[in-house]
Length: 338
Image 1 (cartoon, rainbow, N blue to C red):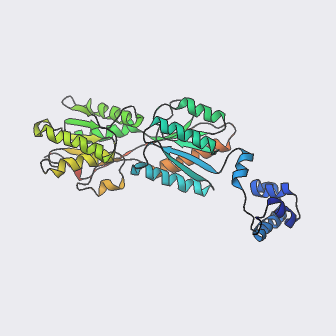
Image 2: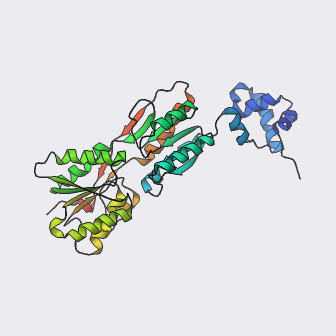
Image 3: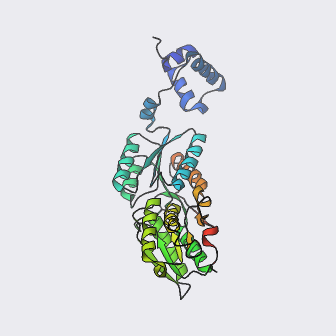
């Protein structure tokens, strides 16, 4: 069995010191072009493969980036992850993905795991307040960028969408189409994004003296959770049905739509207007095309990688918070009341 070529073999073949080969691999700007060509030719001829596991122990980190999201089953996060992976690949890095499932315990386990893997940095859409854990990571040389969450302090860089503005846009749109008995379905308000969207909706409703906003509980942010709330609304009957519903994400809205339309008892938008949030691909192709608040998922993912690169490359980084403005996308589900 042939022995795998070592860095010492490369050095001997190229007629240089082992340290020169190391510099070609890790700090090529320190080596002359002529010497670099000799070393690279030796690497090709011998079939040398660098040992990144050993390298990351020496330099203190790997070429991997940890990314923790709230729900990888949500197409919104899937799109953010894909954009981050593409941007990382252009820099020669790879993304390790963790799905917290809105569970703080799982989130903590992923943070510990990525630290053990010596990732060069962490991107995280946190479940709750993880400031203490992230402070500890930074002390250990692992910079962090918050994704889809605006940093409360100047300790971290972050990239997010103005969810308060998005909630306002959604509710204001329902009001502008003539609806006055609104309902908000969002799941736990301990999730910062949900709380901000509700806050924005309340701000819009306050502008209309005859408008009301009811907050309905949902056990999660999935299609099934939306169907459950929809079933409850169907059981109420027509007289108790809100005439406008704002769901904190499109999955909830699609579940509500399924429940209301499957019985053929209620019409969307005739009896109730429905708007979601995220503008996932399924929104436009729903049975009744769903109005939604669009988030720039590609920009979120790419910007997260850019911010992390700034943190990694600078000895004293200036933490930046980037906030994007959401966009109202109007479709059939919120056609004006007749």
